[in-house]
Amino acid sequence: FDQCQSQPAMVWNGLTEYCYDCTQIEGCGFCGGHCTAGNADGPLDLNMCPPSGGGWVYKTCANPAGDLSVFFMVAYLFAFGIGMGGMPWTITSEIYPLQYRSLAVSCTTATNWLGNLVVAATFLSISSPSVLTAYGAFWLYAG
Image (cartoon, rainbow, N blue to C red):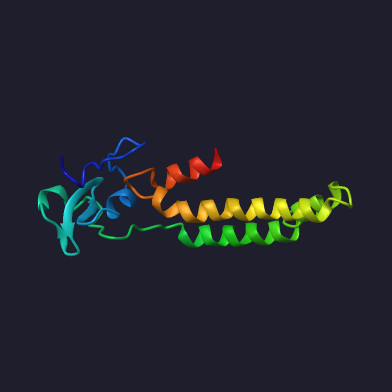
């Protein structure tokens, strides 16, 4: 099989239908809705990339809403930080009896950090095109 058209995958169908999936594969690029073999200069088969196909993309994909995404992420973090960000710490310090409070808060904090460690340690390998892709990784952690 053509390495650029499909990849062996554990969960998803393995077809490289999107620019992000395609440009993550070594020696592949995206043009005209197709993933094809090529290099930084262009596709190896010029018929795969017609002039009206949107141009050759190799290694990176355009994201016209990238600045907007960053703005909304910062706005969310700001609003969460001044609002609900401190609630878990406040609630855990109030719901446990005084004699068990320090141990219980330590356990909940350790659980929080352990969850963060699992996500941080596994995200890059799970989000690779040969496993789940970035979309699949987010669905895995959300569900």
